[in-house]
Image (cartoon, rainbow, N blue to C red; front, top):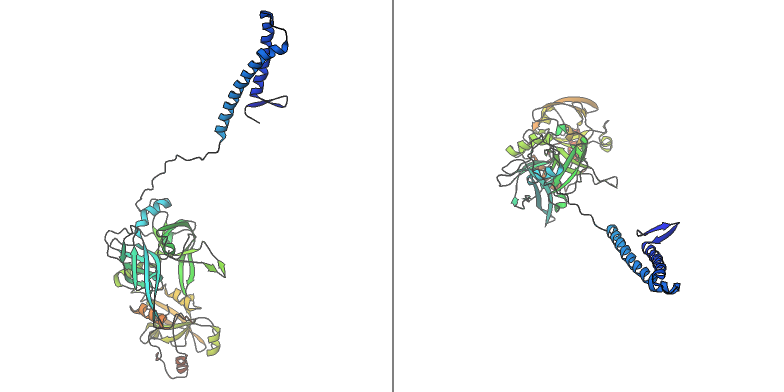
Length: 463
């Protein structure tokens, strides 16, 4: 209904219509009075024309102006408009990370972004005499004021040059101090003083549902981006390219380039190193499943690498391993189809001292069942050099046990690993990329003796 009209007996009546009626009535009243007072003609039509009609027109004009004014005012109130907030935006404060003050995620970012770095690497590969340049990117973070940076091993593996870019845009050439493939950690160093190191938290206290944030370099282009989520699971065992890891599972957005970056809790502490993401599973695209290495699991090794360039107390067995399977069991007429087949034993190693032989199948270490090479790698992570463990093995149709005291992994082990993988063209072949000559086992089985005659040092220890 028009706002300047109302209903009388169900009929909509305009304001100016009311005024016209009132004008005519008033005019007629004046006409009757003038007839008596001034002896005007009694012709009613003439009186209406002379008095009532002009008065009615005046009232109509007044009513029109009033109606237009009211209508215009109403239209002005109801017109389409964009509401703009006048709220004052609070400034994000840089809060000191002390492990006691809980922060908003904006504060976590502001307090730590200067500790995060973007890493860009290049590698030169020779394919059939042709030199090919490749590039990759990742993330890292300062752990000391004098320029030590922690990242993933797979970010810098095989790199010929490593460059680090800070949040302020400065770029530095980085030196690789050392790394460990089994734990996927690497330590870099740049010539800088006064860097802002992160504060490391306690990853053993991480709870499912806890808020976390990852800061990194997704896709190698979207530098210093933050994604927020929660902890989905702790102590999640996953397998990455044949190597088992104990991980913190999160639902933060993790993409290529985030690797090596910090995972922060709501107190601004680093509780993990972002390392991997499920992108597909059984031909199904997967989102919201990312993983980080718990910082407590690698902190001692990180310090060891900073001091010595490698993990000095990393347990070492001294064998060339291969996952046992049904085909091998049939070929060698073994009764076991699972475990780790010993392809060779290094002379003077912990394995030789314990009495392990080529052809043995390791089925258990202490109370941990070993069904594959990955199980052996995972089990060995629980030990350090000098620790002693009971190995259960299958030999000549019988189950036996031997006591093995782990050696320390040699400093050149990582170099040997890289050389082996390049020489073998990255072919895992079910044995983690290791090479062995089947005739060595044949000769040993029939008493010709074996001490790795065809084994030229290109493989690595089992775990």
